[in-house]
Length: 174
Image (cartoon, rainbow, N blue to C red; front, side, top):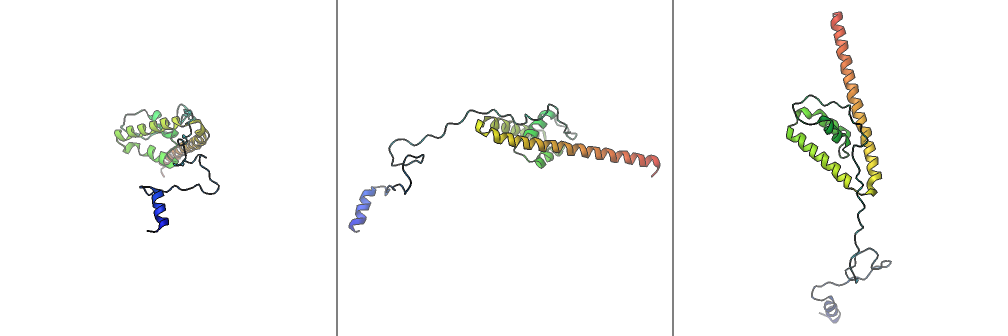
């Protein structure tokens, strides 16, 4: 070992750690933790007050969506409000859930309700700085829900019209 490397080894100490000087343009204490700087690391920013943002607040009391007949026991309007207010699901996913209700078990519906309630709670706990983003998402999902309801209504109307046309054909003997 030459003199230079033994000097470096001695200054590095037993751990082999050598402090790295700040790079050009950097100075210690500007929000970056420097283990060699005196004092304590900077504190994380203080969380803002919870905004208590309520998902689904744009929805009316009574939703137009009709759930297919089923043998399950749950508050359909409450379930629909939770589903419609969810900002974690896409429009298609929401529609598939409604259409598959009759195939679900009671425990699955109960679990969905629990998940939607937890989602509401977590979004209500977000800080006030997130409200503008949440409002945009809530508006988008509200518009999606209105679209889902309109499609279901149009589908029902088309089915009704087809039944009436079939009855008229039968009456005419066609």
